[in-house]
Amino acid sequence: MIVILAGIMSLFFAMNIGASGAAASLGVAYGSGAIPKKRVALLICGVAIFLGAVIGGSEVVKTVGEGLIPSDILDAKIVLIILSSAALSLFIANIMGIPLSTSEITVGSVVGVGVAFKSLYIANILWIVFFWILVPIVSFLIALSAGKYIRKLEDQNEWIRNPNNEKYLSIFVIVIGCFEAFSAGMNNVANSIGPLVGAHLISMNTGVVVGGFFIAIGAFFLGGRVLQTNGKKIVQFSKLEGGLISGTGATLVMIASIFGIPVPLTQVTSSAIIGIGVSKNGYEMLKKKLVLRIFKVWLVSPILSLVISYSLVQLFIKADIYSVLIILSVCIATLGIISLMKTIREDNSTIYEDGGGI
Image (cartoon, rainbow, N blue to C red; front, top):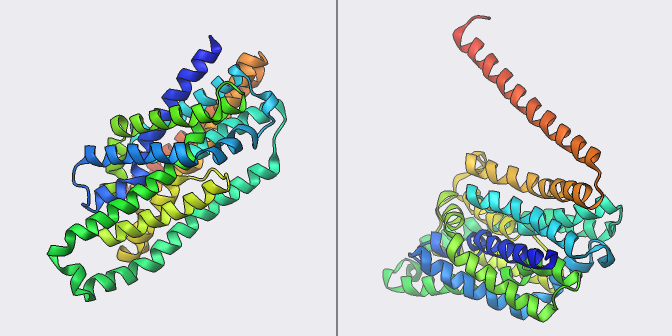
């Protein structure tokens, strides 16, 4: 029964990965107008993600299933806890329409289990976190540096400005977007089926096919809101800028996938989009509420999934209710302090505006 529940949770998680990954791949093609219809963009995204998962997803699957914690810890119950923690975090983010890194929340969930059992491959985890920081920075800097050059090229090149050549630019952006969606499949399928493979509940070949298929289904049916967020709400961009964004993300994620490193695909793409925005509008772009909101979710997501998985292990595996109570108390206290600080700021603002005290 537990094995069946773990399998169901894996497929549910895969669908949510597809929903989140949709914005990180075809979102730029949709936002630049190369693919005007949302459903068409989502369909193309799903097909490319499936092919990437089947053809090149195995290396990252090995890392998630065996490279973070000893595989002998993994059984059906632990796999269910890992996937439930990650799926819950991602589902909340999809409802909010925020592009969230499935790699971060999956690794956070696995690490939470490792912390509970006091058994982690620390060196591997630190190496992965280093790339989480490095790759989005590189993506941002590439887009920032190339953004101004692209605008000059668009202003000075008559062929690019010719409306008759618009279709060629659209094809270019769509092809690059498919390349990025392919890389998404390579890197993200591990997040849904990696724990199952690590626990030997499913074979590698079957896992990448089934996982890739359900990621594709999730992209098509659930990816609309996140596609809209990345494609339309952060910054408007041309087709060449969209090609730069997709090409940067695809190349970086593909390289990481070949070496078996799970990286935050949505962070790579969103960082490139923000880099284009900064090159066009200056660093005031970083003050937009949506951008700040994305940064906050990126920071909280791995910690949230870590805490959830750790708590579930303590509650259902070790039956240590006291540890869970301590965690809940810390969470409640933290929320209370944040609420109190907000109230104090509002009170101070009111006092200042009214010119008086209580």
